[in-house]
Image (cartoon, rainbow, N blue to C red):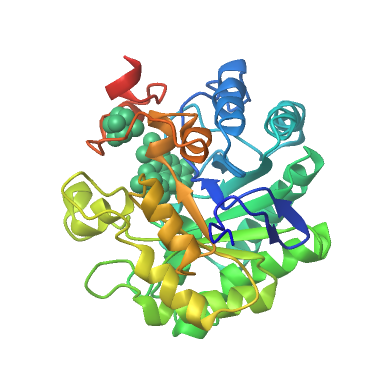
Length: 352
Ligand SMILES: Cc1cc2nc3c(=O)[nH]c(=O)nc-3n(C[C@H](O)[C@H](O)[C@H](O)COP(=O)(O)O)c2cc1C
Ligand code: SF4
């Protein structure tokens, strides 16, 4: 009997993913200055799709040019003019046999605002921007839309006990803090149809004093699924308010060589115990084939996302399947230093 489930297909809603490995969304700085898909961007994702990853999540994509994390090169979906380029990108990923997902995100910090600074009208406008961008994602031929609800992005700020100090129905308590995210999911389903899958990427724990814990994220996951989410992707950390980019929370988002392998798996595992019916995805310093097999085969998570392991070796999954040697990520984060300098992202250790 074959007990290895890693290379068995799995459904996200009605979409069949050929195996259990997900490319974690990673901003590449390969979009053009004004946010269009480029040939280099297409090649980057084509290589990872042909490298055997079942579900490719394309990097964070902008829903509004005023609220982006970086000054330039933000892949964009805030206007119909971006659809033809996105179409070519989705087609390249699908041609290689992978399922194509695209992450939509918004960064309120770009305009120095917090959830409590927004009027209800402004909140509704952001909800509309998310849903309109999701319509373009579907039009462009992607199979799935992924909502960035983790780290320090706008939806995460609404979900966060630390960041959301609103006193109205969009805040106040866990129920209120979840309303913004839930509304985006519900409205997306109304516009795109029940069958178009939504993956929600959340923080399993914010890893900061006063921030969300697994208790909050379990509740959030349950409610997102009730609203229509078809999978929950459990990331962690990424909040820099207490201690800046060297805070523990920040490192927890992109764990370094000093930290344990698979350090976030227990968060997905706990959510999976309480949230049935949809796949739960884990992420964070996973580059060891044995660990991937253990996670999936022992049911700690349904799917495993890899980020830097797939930067270090685009063929990681094929090589894992064929038990061939691969270029192992050393988690020293030199790729992130390129990202922070707004340069094209690549694996510095092996590709320079
Ligand atoms: C260069 C780089 C860019 C990233 N960009 C994004 C992003 O666009 N959206 C997102 O949700 N996470 C982003 N992340 C976080 C990754 O998706 C992932 O959660 C993190 O790298 C941990 O996984 P890993 O240990 O397998 O690399 C990025 C990480 C890196 C290294
Ligand atoms: S630069 Fe370092 S951390 Fe980044 S992918 Fe390469 S080996 Fe991994």
